[in-house]
Length: 124
Image 1 (tube, rainbow, N blue to C red):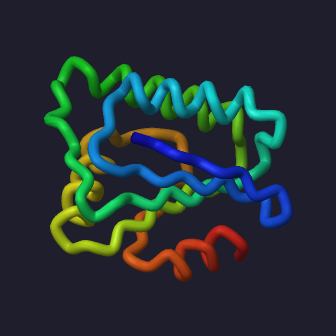
Image 2: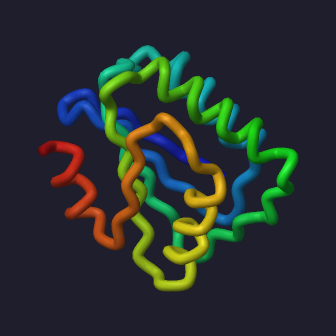
């Protein structure tokens, strides 16, 4: 599940991923954001991952699709940063592995353990 809020004053899209996530949910999330009246392509993103997230096995034949979806979204938002905050050790390692698996992608994504560090990077 992905919930989001667009903070126009900070120019950040805040998203929270909890429970589990699928490619279809990512695509729906992107569509929802793009169609949100508060959306601006220049806003950075902070994605907070719940410590109980279950990431399904990524089938090798789906990696190219995931790359295409992320690259397409990144192309619409040139110059933006995407911070991913995951505090728990095991979940952090799983998310890091998943991000490594889908490389190379054109999005400027950086993984953090602390939300404050992530926000500081976005605002720098």
